[in-house]
Image 1 (cartoon, rainbow, N blue to C red):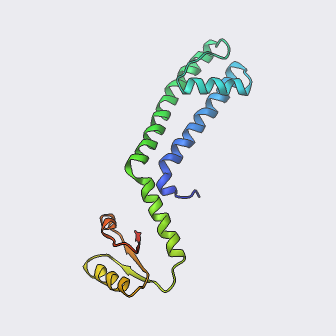
Image 2 (cartoon, rainbow, N blue to C red):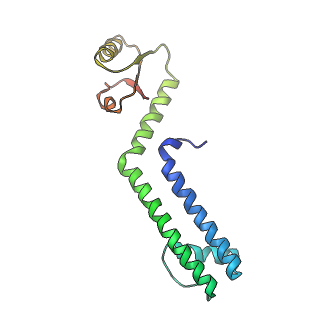
Image 3 (cartoon, helix red, strand yellow):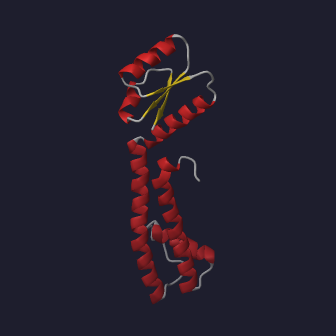
Length: 159
């Protein structure tokens, strides 16, 4: 589907909802007020962003009700989008995604490597010995806390 969907799911949803609200507003103004698509889109943008610059043309009563509904629904959606993006940046999801991408890329070109399942006491010792003898090592570990303990030169797969 989309690259990195599991990491960017919230951002994809926020983007999708934002596009939907823009289409909803544009179609609504076009049908209710009979405006051109560009005018309806412009009015939707200034309404959704709460700029409130100036109405494209005077609104009918139905247009005012539609505008009120558009403001109420878009406010929640825009707040969700901003909080999702902020949460994504603050929680380190981008760093996690980049680490996994780098791991996948390095594994793709490895040859004659050794896979160690688990990075406990025995796994650490085995990895240390293999690295000493110059063998590429891939560690598969399901505990996220172990990621910080992995020695340099070891490729890690979490899961």
